[in-house]
Image 1 (cartoon, rainbow, N blue to C red):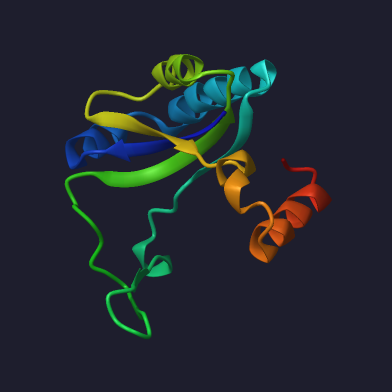
Image 2: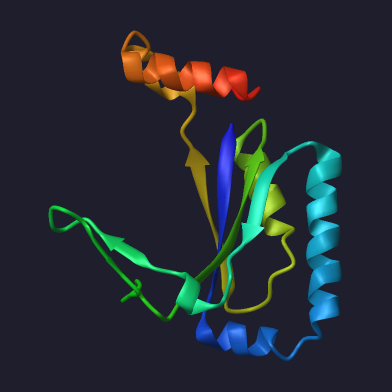
Length: 141
């Protein structure tokens, strides 16, 4: 099963984070990532850039959608990054998420990622066949 660990922090957690030497943060996150890699569960993971001038929002409430530089969702929690892991169970995903070196005011939202098996009843559609072929070309299931 694949899970996405979505890292969220409050403004207060972010302020506390800025007081910690970045080298220390890099070392703790590096150790966490290394443990995920050694266990063979890490599929992907990225931190998100703080530079808001590079970010934007696409609002689908109109046709065509409108692209703006904001507003974003609730600002009391910031979406800072993510990992995608593959584990044998929900409990194992929770165990890995609990090991993440985040401090007070931060949390991980853990969401199961849909897989091709979730769309088995639509396996004969062209869209699903094309996606399955694309994934097979990339060595993904």
